[in-house]
Image (cartoon, rainbow, N blue to C red):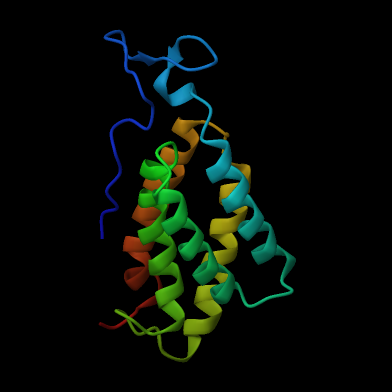
Amino acid sequence: MKTPHPQSWCRVTRPEGGTSSDHGWMPEAEQPATPALIQRVDSFMYRVLDRAEDPVGVIEELKAALTELALMADSAGPAEALYPIMADLSDIADHYPVDYGEDAEMIARREIGDAARDWLRLPRTAGGVKSYVDRWAERVAALPATYRGRP
């Protein structure tokens, strides 16, 4: 599944390819990512890595938070782009739409952990979030082949 994402998550785009912000004119990819989005997603990703809770349950909670963030004008694009990736990761444990057999829970935990570590390493820019979404959309799409899942 290809994850849709908007071309720009910034308000004003200059003809030269930059955008306006409180940080002056800078290329769109270097714009700071929405702080509300980064803080909320960070908190869930740290919980995944703490291993005190079921990572699939944490991702389910993150999906609800992303739905709320999608209603905020500044976070709408990135939140809407992240949601299907998190949904696909949590679906692994549910054997839907692909059945990974008896290893489904282990695969879900591994992939969710990797997604959390990758998120926490990303540059805190619009370009960093977009790059994360692109990478994980590709990775999620490749999971059935990687783990020999069955529809």
